[in-house]
Length: 108
Image 1 (tube, rainbow, N blue to C red):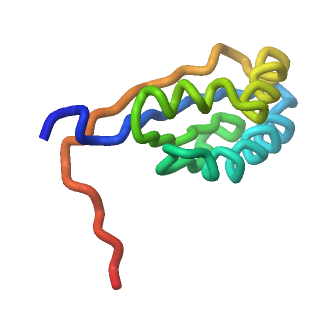
Image 2 (image 1 turned 45 degrees about the horizontal axis):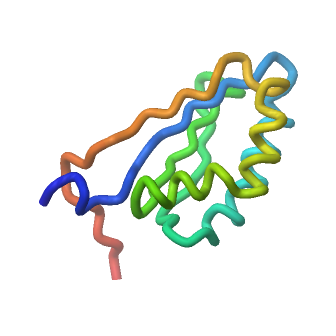
């Protein structure tokens, strides 16, 4: 299989400004359900570092670049983008990943 056979998977790293972690967390949580409902979204899950509260990781998977591009233009993402500068200690970092192992098959 080649790269085009896999979804577009990324990790977004978002670090809150001091005192902004609860607000950033709420803003990120508000993205979850509308993003999961988007055509082409396969995964959208938020994590927070145990050893670094206020640092969040959003695991994202979209069918392809077009689905990701469409996500970036949605009203819910644009609302988040308008707040990002006030909430983030540094620019959002987006890391794209290629699969190396096979996917986990859910247990019956």
